[in-house]
Image (cartoon, rainbow, N blue to C red; front, side, top):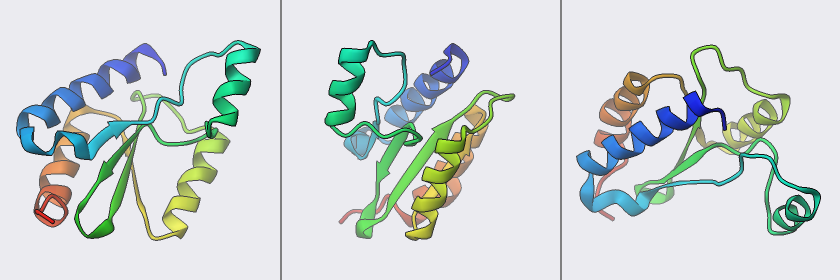
Length: 120
């Protein structure tokens, strides 16, 4: 993940953890980015690494799963990311492209807070 995207993701996670301290385990990253050497890359692939997987997952109430892809303001989705996101949406899942801290806060506060972060 590029540094700008990494900083954005870290900022969003810190905010989420402060806003929802009892819900921290619902939001976690998918460590799918970064360069790998051939041996490590093969091991990660064998362990389930998938090209195009979103950056983070939010496990929500009622069996809902929400995915977040963090991009810089100028960042673009790779073909693998586009395909992965379309597959998730085809299954009825939600994928959000987050390009700013305000994007993330708005998504969580307006859509997720009221509809998803309810106690099981």
